Image (tube, rainbow, N blue to C red; front, side, top):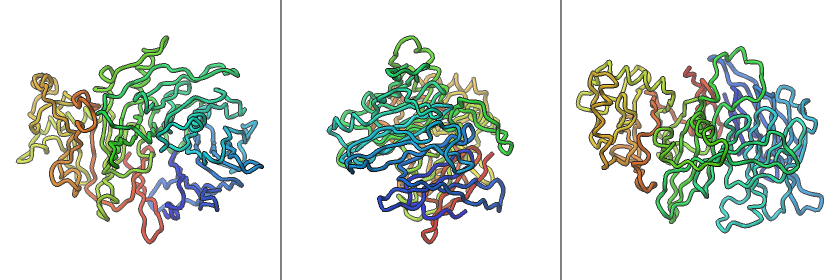
Length: 508
């Protein structure tokens, strides 16, 4: 499905089976229209594009399609004296392309800022009747300009009335924004190095503000390392209102089961920057938040992270798009840009514990016949894909600390776990998250593909055992700039003769 030149627009989204793309930039380099089309539901189907046109510059937009039939635009206009930018919300109904009929004020102001600040980067989410928007100015300002801090805000509105829920907004440090429930938000705090859980006021007043429920702290990083450019996403969003289920998509991922991916840039100085992703289930964050109710609680990494989260180095994977997860699955692809024009396999990481147990059981039943390659004892080959567990994974034990390649014997999961108990006490922990080269294909590194966590974290062993997952790697390889995910679909984005196309795969 051709989509025009993607590089001309910096705004896009993929949600509820619909792909959105900003129109060509206006004279101020911002789009003033939004194209969208339903993704095909069967081979050969070609769906027509629709378009919503605005008379003002679009900074970004958010959607609430299944629940509210809503597209919420964050727009900017110049003040009459040409000295300020007005940052506004414009609410449209997707099905009609007109102002949303449920909005008493389909246009309302978020903030206004002096032109010297420029236009902000924004993040926007809508759940139920609540619209949450972050405005963030000059993310590269290391001096902490007070004007920037004053305007770097998380603002909440009752979108149907346009009434502010937290007048004046809440200070934020980046664009990371994710609904945990209709009443709770997640925001990663780069300064305190923790995931903040914030409660939305039940009965907003002119003085109501967000309250901190708890913070889930990161593991301790190496000194001198800075965290920047954090974003996060957990698809699908929770639902605030009941809505009619799409009959063509009767089986949907549940928001409470979904993973949240927190992407961040780790700056080591001297122009050395690595991209990392933290993966955690929404239910894990909610479980700890519920225990902290009644008083703000700071939860150390050791109490929640080693078994509830997993870190990935993703510098060599495709980046620049946040729509790479849906439900409990996370799609990756080695970066074509970094490796040159080389076809690569698509990787799907599945954090569903039922999938992990099923693959473990099949590997045990097969007896781990690995031949000369012991890592094959953790792989299942099919005609179309290779299904693997992390190299240090053993059935019954999500992560071990052995330096040696694992072997799998035909025993029960519980027996395997018992036999590995001595490894769990080994203080000489292996600081790598590893996969053999035959899994990744022709990457830059000639030996094992490794991310040495010791260069990032003060004590890499505190990451173990790590949230279990299963990685599926396609046998067929593709020349895509990026891969995206929307529920049961993987979307490959390719460019041929400067024309971008979407290629849709169904994974069930």
